[in-house]
Amino acid sequence: MSRIRARFAGSGMAVPSRVIDNSTLARVMETDDVWVRERSGVVERRYVEAGVASSDLGAEAARAALADARMASDEIDYIVCATMTPDHFFPGCGTLLQQKLGMRPIPALDIRQQCAGFAYGLQMVDALIRSGIARNVLLVGTDVHTSLMPFSERTWAVIEGREEGPISPEEDAWNSRFRHLLVLFGDGAGAMVFRASEENDGRGILGARLFGDGNHQDILTVPGLGSARRPFVTAEQIAAGETVPVMDGRKVFKLAVTLMPQAASGLLAEHDFTIADLDLLVMHQANLRINEAAQKALGLPDAKVHNNIQKYGNTTSATLPLCFHEARLAGKVPEGALVEFAALGAGLHWGAVLLRL
Image (tube, rainbow, N blue to C red):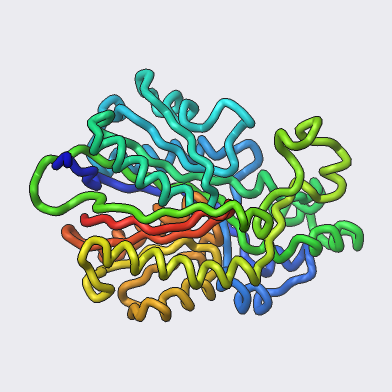
């Protein structure tokens, strides 16, 4: 077995400057701050300006990660990008990142595992480096969820403070139909850089335990859009709200609080660790109540968990690197720390990844 490991080199993040709190959303739908906090833990989230795409946020996070790693862009020889909100149906965001970062032509791969995308990306990085295919890999998780929000121009004007409310009763009813999802999501990006290392110090990506099960595909999906439709999208689908994600929240909650702890504890056991050996657990930031239940199931103290859904909402592919980067800034993951990432997302995809810093 190869002794080469994918060793962490740097991280970075990018979030929009526009902060949208719960009271702002209460101006355009039937909700309030208490309702949102009690159900999700979200206090505020970030929205991009119109025209800012996933590759734009991803490139900003990538630049920050490269600077943190003290690497020039031309040292990267492979890009892996996780997103569920690509700039275009095609091409993917990987080559857009390559172009925006001024890199030479290199392989650029997009993956689509939604909220578990970054965890899958970590396993891909490990495989690329261990196999010798790549030496320095840039992994980016980026999503612009505002592109999926079915708001009218009038609603957007009120949210962004360009116009005063109220909106019409019809618009309020339309927005409120999707409130259980719209209050959760924000825009953001995170990135990590890994380099090949042959040092026998136990540092790097140690392993992954990932799963996929299409039997749960209907509990979190977008019913419209895609090749199963002809054409890809119609005005009727948009009018019916079929381009907006649908979620069976209770089933997602039940699966997440069971499957994430199982994957996390199973992976630790595979590598002869116990939960006591773990320095930090970074979970996907879908719902604070899910993470609190998973933390309790694993028996982890608060000091060994980091959550930031309160500030950013669910940023899907970006939650793991955003959370990890902020934990680093807070001093929670010094050199040598054992960090575990755990996530669950649509598909169903879920799993865990171990990293020794």
